[in-house]
Image 1: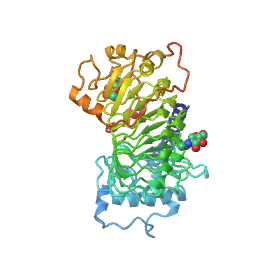
Image 2: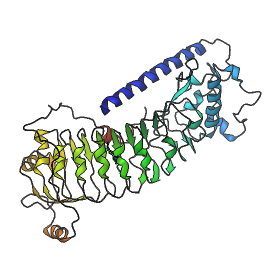
Image 3: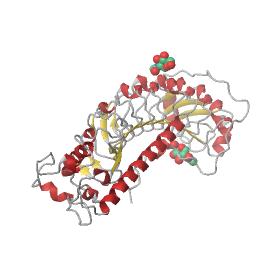
Length: 441
Ligand SMILES: *[C@@H]1O[C@H](CO)[C@@H](O)[C@H](O)[C@H]1NC(C)=O
Ligand SMILES: *[C@@H]1O[C@H](CO)[C@@H](O)[C@H](O)[C@H]1NC(C)=O
């Protein structure tokens, strides 16, 4: 369900971009045809002056000088206002390696590089800036406050891989915004709570910035499909309400989250497809409720400080392909029901290295041989590459807070239900999100 929703979303945005870029092309043709009217503000065959020439402060402010462009110069009033906002933002830009801002001149903002127009739903005859795509432009600006928030008809704002700093503005005045991507920038401060009341937002990408503090519980109350928070400095406990979220793809990796994985994750059982808790400071016992994630394909909580045995409920994760719990403080026996997922489910990779497991369930031994299961650096007698007996006994005598849970809240399949794997390895949305996007050519 959720992945179908995502697909629909991607389709929608492609269509929107297509419409808007064809609109843009039409404008470009009109202008390229040299129709004389309305031109003369740097558009056309004569090369426009470098945008950086404006940055010495000698030019007048963009805000409506009476001698400057008039509303009647523009296709509509919305585009005139957008023009003013864009020109003001342009003056704050301090680097532009690709020279894109040189195209931000003239009375046709729909033709500016990075801007796309479409008619907003409430005024179908008034095409205006509906989408901003600065991905990979490498622009520098001290803030996007006064820019994004002043383009009221925006549906998409994609600005990954720039050098935008400051906080994220209050976007509550943008009713159509459904995708916000500010990843790989220099944003800092607390979680931008003001982006959340947006009823249409379904894609929120904040990864690779310097956001810190807590992710507020309210994030998980909204109807989002994709939440990418990885590679920031979040360092508070995960909110107990995490599981309320209908999100399909959730990345919390490479932060400093503390506390435990909330048992409310149970409530995400029909929606959560991939989740990365990887590389935080999460502690506590592995919750039994994880076993309810019936459509999850990726569950990765590697490199935390979680402890306890693996609950047998994990044997219900029949759709799971990647299970990573490496680098924690887990102990006990690796449950046979979990290893059976490789035969009866879709499990292709079970990473449990760097824990304190002492025994393997019956079905696990084969998986070690086939390298589906990695249990190096544990305390398993008879296997190579284990921890030293001293390390194992120190851990063994330490306190143990988690009880084994042998409850299996599903009926296990009688035989293999495995789908035939395609020869090309699947690409996981969340694991992709751990890499910076490739630079634009
Ligand atoms: C989980 O869902 C149930 C029923 O759908 C609801 O009553 C409960 O409050 C939810 N819990 C959380 C933590 O979201
Ligand atoms: C298995 O998972 C581990 C941990 O996520 C990862 O490092 C490794 O590359 C994966 N191996 C395969 C073959 O997917």
